[in-house]
Length: 208
Image 1 (tube, one colour):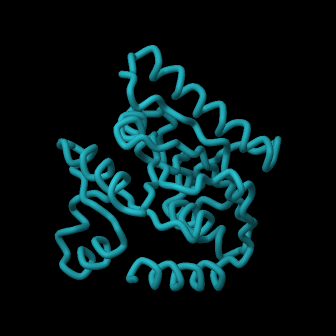
Image 2 (image 1 turned 90 degrees about the vertical axis):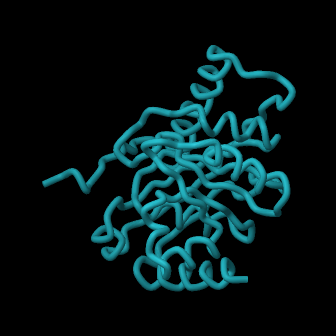
């Protein structure tokens, strides 16, 4: 209930701030649970991912420091977030999302690169997808990467790609992981080209 309320609030705020969002290929989204993955290009792209894939509800990882504030902790917990120690990630990083994907009608948003300033994909999403037996849906955000750009009402586009299925009964070797990660990367490039063939990601927050 709280998640639905927060999503309505987020949709209103996003519309008032920008009002120029477009969502493509929603028909590619699976009917069951899945993991939505994409390159992390803005601190707010997760919000657009969740809005674009609605009415599906999502969980997500958040650094454990955010949970120390009781008010923020309440909001995060009821918005389906779970804490992660990024310096020393424990088994819960895998166990929690796997259990939720299996036992709850809730999907997961992940950024395999880990941060907005890295383009290197990590294998954690593959392990979670395999153990939970859910597909991975490549997703791309194109648009402003700063709040200033949003306020200028620059166009925002979210597009979904074809789901990537993993064999839950088969152990992933390092070579097989690299093949799937490369497939994921190529899917991001394909989606980017569909939205705008000339698109080049520029981290505006790094520009002085």
